[in-house]
Amino acid sequence: MSRAARRAWQDLRGEMMGSAARAVGTLYRRFQEEANRGYAARGWKGATLTHVQFLSDLEETGTRLSEVAAALNWSKQYAGRLGKELETKRLVTLETDPRDKRAVLARPTERGRAFLQDACEVRAKLESGFLGKLSASRAAEWVAAVKAMIEG
Image (cartoon, rainbow, N blue to C red; front, side):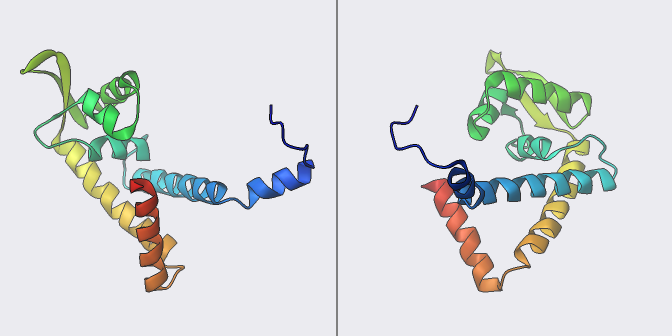
């Protein structure tokens, strides 16, 4: 428990409601909801932004599930579960890595490629809509600032 002086609930709530963290979280959730609706509108029922993130981290020749997990800061178990889910949806194939029989490679299928192409088009439309509320220079500054925060 904090040793700082007890603050009023309304002050704490106001601080959280106006925070950059809340704004980023809200923007992400809105983007995620609209993206998922966009995939469904293109016939990809049950496909999500999480599936897109997984597929985006795959090399065409295959990527170890452990590498996908590390790149996305997921547990290996979660990456494995998503890999199996995507295999069921016929978006990837899973196979034993010939260089290490303990590792599993995920490789995009043609269906997975088609979904990722649609997802790129959905993303571009959504980004245009969200960033279109800003001037071109402010949009470029915002993208650069977010990338700097992620990298830093």
